[in-house]
Length: 76
Ligand code: SF4
Image (cartoon, rainbow, N blue to C red; front, side, top):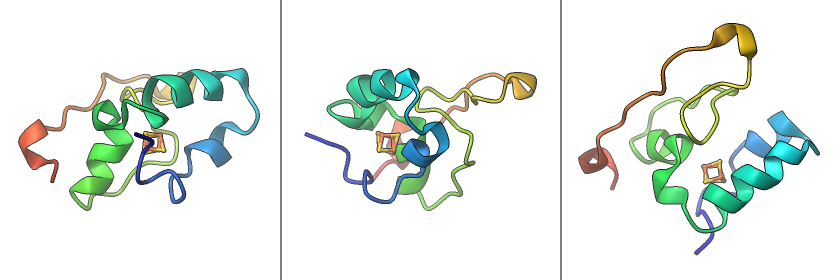
């Protein structure tokens, strides 16, 4: 099942036509959205940083930081 947030998610605009987008779409957007940190944050009403990738990393190299953790029980 595709991600219910797909039409509102800004990841695609952030990455444009980069080949990495295809990887994220395949791994998360098309069938694994429940594992996506962007989806989880949206589901609990939190702000999603524009540069946040589905696995919790950012795509800004200088902003390297550990992945965010969102407890599954917070996802509706
Ligand atoms: S990046 Fe996450 S929130 Fe955005 S469309 Fe893909 S699975 Fe959904």
